[in-house]
Image (cartoon, rainbow, N blue to C red):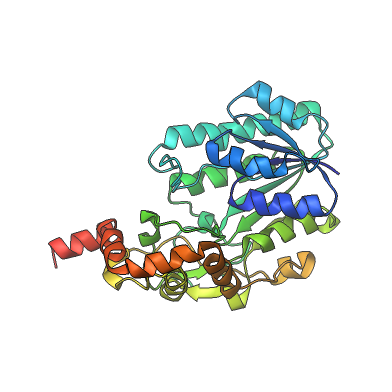
Amino acid sequence: MKLLLTGAFGNIGQATLAALHQRGHEIRCFDVPTKNNQRVARYWQNRNIEITWGDLRDPIAVQQAVANREIVIHLAFVIPNLPTTGVGSENAPQRAFAINVSGAKLLIDSMKKQQPQAKLLFTSSLHVFGQTQHLPPPRQVTDPVHPEEHYSRHKVQVEKMVRESGLDWTIFRLGAAMPVKMIFDAGMFDLTINNRIEFVHRQDVARAIANALETEAVWGKLWLIGGGPRNQYIYRDLASKVLDAMGVGMLPDAAFSPTPYPTDWLDTTESQKVLNFQEHTLDDYVAELQQKLGWRRAVITWFRPAIRIWLLRRSPWYRQRKKHP
């Protein structure tokens, strides 16, 4: 199939690109030419992949990207915490809206004008459910949405546009799909320590997307894409596994937010039945992370006390509690 993959060189994008390439699709990648994206793209230059650099805010670039595509997989989105640029959806909401919502409208309008028979797969997020820790889990695809931050409000707006577009569409609401790299971001402290959270391996997300293109039953429906019951955690346990893998070790509870966060467990019974994508666990992710860190993990372990102090200083909750015990 002739595919357009937006956000091709991001976390989910890289895994999806690999899965789609393995299945022999004709892929056009669309992403912004950051240094990191260009570095990733070099790997694909001689692998029969078309690379188109552009911005979702540029109508001409979007029209050129959509041309002659049968399916558009729309991953590109400004998320709350972007450690590579420091410009996320919450500290630059107008910019994020222009990319996330206005950019999605440009994409949909271009598809309707140029490729009205093309199909659209949009990746949303479990964040759209809002704070649900007071409700019995798991979340159902039919649960109402209560977006609480710019990021999830943008997701809900784009979901609505997709459903009302007149195109053949499907929407995937993803669980927590973490990149396999060391990120010491202050966003790790935004979750309360007892928050329910469902991990999903990015390769399993990619498998779900690739399988969807071969499954007629997915179109015209919303799907929850999580790791399944064996990947359902309390945040303390998930954070402990990841921080131990990095060599840092679990941080004190006082470093984490006291306010519930919009993550939860998901009912993926139907999506797993149709898409057959759940293969990996958090332990697989931890093993990959340790392997990728290599010798650097020993260095982190050696300097662990200093790194832990530095991390705790990045937590607004820890600073506040130390100031007002």
